[in-house]
Length: 458
Image 1 (cartoon, helix red, strand yellow):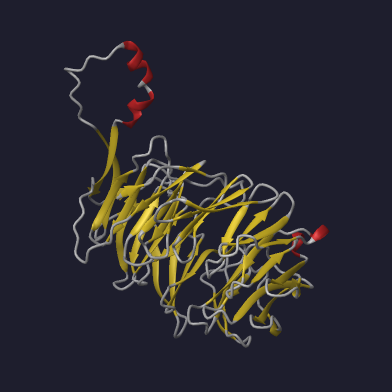
Image 2 (image 1 turned 90 degrees about the vertical axis):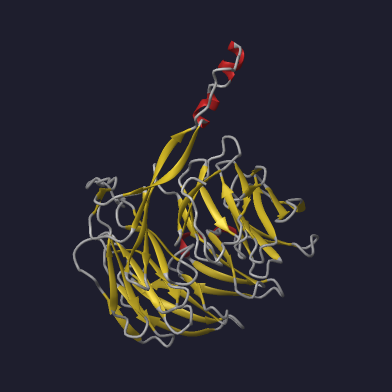
């Protein structure tokens, strides 16, 4: 892997959907770089510090959210002189997102008073009253023709279906939830999944015309659903719960066909490979070196870098580090907080938040555990390669960790004092965006050969 130099950022940074550009916020400036040369191609100045950014799907426009104002500014890469500013006045703006056609911006006001659709083509705008959430509760079909928006009025949850052509309401129907958390269209646009708050275990599947196709409730007492995700193929729906179990439903009967438990002790029989991150000090022969005191004093910080890490394959039984959450605090750190499908829908990775240093990889085709990665530090982020079956994760250290069906390996980031706290793939799988607290870099990732055997200490 090849790494670029580090570049400054003070907030969000992300790839454009067409993988040609990287946008990074530096205080009130929006810096657009080319992903091949990393030269600055555009520099936009906003009216205040940038809180979040989002690319339009056609990669021609980009919006910046300014929380302190609050307002939205949008920019065009092809027409740098063009600019757009959206200000809701006293209502404020809590969140903004692009529509699938890249020519409309949806903003949610403070206190969820209304959702407004702003057109970049003309001055028209459409209002939807009482959206349920600011940053959640809106989902678009894959073809971009319809939007489902969660609303709440008279202490009841509703779904509003809108046409993305003229933004007219196509239908409104009530849903059987106490406090709806979020909504997702299925990848084939044939169904809508919604789920209740953590206080009520309830997953509901609705058709676009408002018919309830299935109601799933694994148990009644205790905290309920924590994470939900459709498989890319649309045939499976994964539900992660606070009871530390992953359940997978099929799209034909909506019945559960797999239940995976995350136990703190892994015992035989177990066909999964367990990879544990271990330190390996570098063997340096310093017998013939003569260094003065000033140099030795200045290299104290570098002594921590005289280590590399590798994966060691462990035998079962093995006990994973477990943290029991306190019973007197809300939002306990337990249950399936991280849930992500591979691009081919064969694997799914999970993290049980009460075992934050362990990443579980499940094989859906064979309905078994494929691997467990046990890290030294809590897992910050994990992301699948959008092109091939490869998983990358970070833990806030200077290393990257990768898993493929052939094995697992560690990659050292050569940049000094760079801790990888977050990562993102570009859309063609050729590059990784790695974030530190105040800087970011990119790593060129080689294509995965069809048959490969990786060593654990690469």
